[in-house]
Structure formats: structure tokens, C-alpha cells
Length: 127
Image (cartoon, rainbow, N blue to C red; front, side):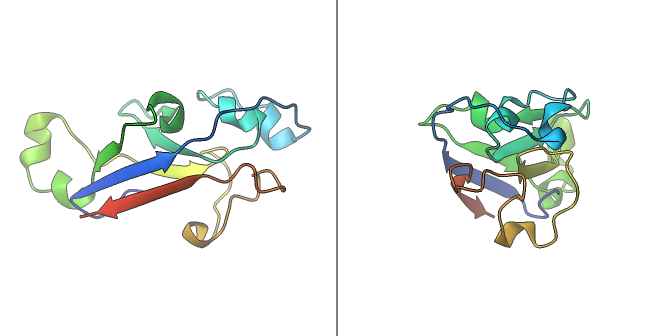
């Protein structure tokens, strides 16, 4: 989805990855994006770039960094185009191209580890 706001600021506590094999057909054939988290079935913040490629933001940011995303209201203001900014599609999922999850803001991704170890902890300020 894209946020309708001006800006979204996200801080997340990203746990250290512990590789473990899984037997999941949904995750074993995924080669369209940099999805190393699917190996441990951990949800992550995925952001789609202007070339429609998904990137795992949780693997890119450091523990003392935040993610700032432009929302659709900012995009339509006219300022964003002069700065080369756009409202990026994003998702918190194990696989960003997985099937639609109804009320996904209120429940974990069903592809997440069942022991709770794959859940993501974050806070967002939406302006």
C-alpha cells in the first residue's frame, strides 16, 4: 500500500537474523527481490523502488537510523516531483508479493514463523 499522508517516519527494532532452513513452497521459489528474510520466515519492511523492485529496508538500515517515506499528499503537492520523490508502495511481510492479507495492520503475516520469532517490532509517525 501507499500512505496517504505527507510523511511517514519509521523506527524499527530489527533482530539479528539467525539462518534456519524452512520447508515452505511459498518462500523457496522467491527470486524476484532481495528476500533473505524469507529463509527464516521473518516479516520485514519492504519498499518498492521506481523500477518496481522490492527492497528489504530492514536489511539496509542500521540500528540508529530511521526510514522516512513521502506520502501521497506530499506527492500531489507538486514539491515532490521537483525533488524526485514519490509515494512508494510498501509492505510489512515475509514476502512482499504474497497474497493479500485482510486487516494486515492488525495481524501477523501467516507466513511468519509460528513461534513468534519472526514478528517485526516498529513504530511509525504518520504526518
